Amino acid sequence: MTSLELGKRKLIIGMVHLLPLPGSPDYKNNFEDVRRRAVQDAQALAEGGIDGMLVQNRWDRATSRDASSPETVAAMTVITQEIVGKVGAPVGVHILRNDFIGSLAVAKVCGAAFIRATAVVGATYLAHGILEARPEEYIRYQTRMAAQDVQIMADIWSMHYKPLVLTPVEEIARQASSMRLADAVVVAVTDAGEMYEMVKTIKAANAGLPVILGGYTNAGNIGKLLSVADGAIVGRAFERDAGKQQGEVLASRVREFMQVARAG
Image (cartoon, rainbow, N blue to C red):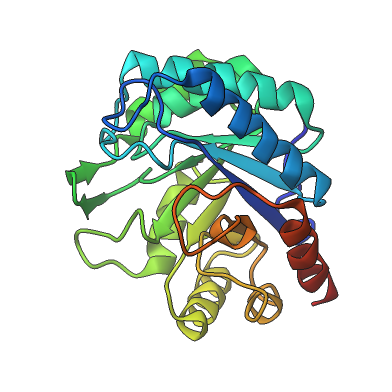
């Protein structure tokens, strides 16, 4: 297992957005096509020089709040294992919305390096309903699986998580880190200036805790944002027809973005 160098250098992590998986309302009984496309996108990210990649069931329209169906976990396992075996970069797992246990199980069994979790502390409102974190259960499962070597990126303010009870973002970061459920915290807001200040606030109150940008970055803002953040998770900016759904990853776009990020 190759771990992410969190806090040691600026990281760009690309998204492998999976086409609808078995069990999804939009699944077309085409798992071989889904698998092939996922591997193709992962290889394009690797060819473009990415630092890591995150496998996510992005296009499963009806995702569970915190416990995915067996077919989702099975499909994620098959795909993740193949990607881990074919790329040299660290691979992560994120089963939406917040299947912490499923993501950790897939990552540990497949030799993946990290997971992304929507909510490890507190609670948030989603279109799917109220999502409450279960930190004690997560910690116990992590121990049961001997999965302390799987790094955790925990959303604390993003499109996936906003606290149900208004809480300073730096305090959510502290709670997640103190529970040892966040090797890095993830933030994302649409306004780049606001995101810049949010990162500064978190880091001022939580020395040494890596902060990763979870979205809304582009070639125009990534340089400034990386002057304070420790990395970024990038998806649509790497895909063909980024304004449309389900576009494949283009290695050329990854290379261009990486050049800008590295120049900053």
